Length: 94
Image (tube, rainbow, N blue to C red; front, side):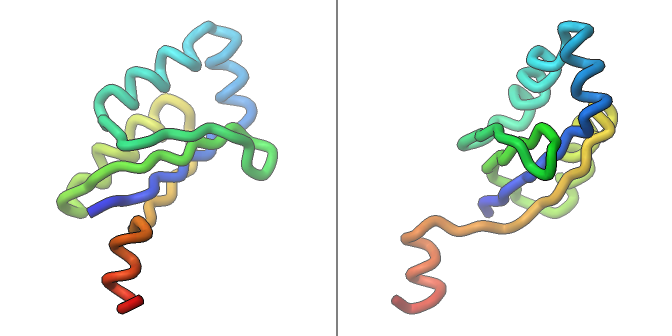
């Protein structure tokens, strides 16, 4: 099932990682393990934010998906199920 992983990186930890030259490399390393379908970065409430679309087969995967963000950046994480247009049309009988 497809999920949206929303990651907010606090300014302090994001800046510290950027100053250490590790922000981009750490994010790339985490994403390499997740193998997402799509990734978008922007700001959200004054913080660095990532919107990551990935496939998850079971809720037991959540700790392994969220923990790297917690450990690397003290990030807040939200996970939401999502549907594409074709999938939602079937679910909602368009």
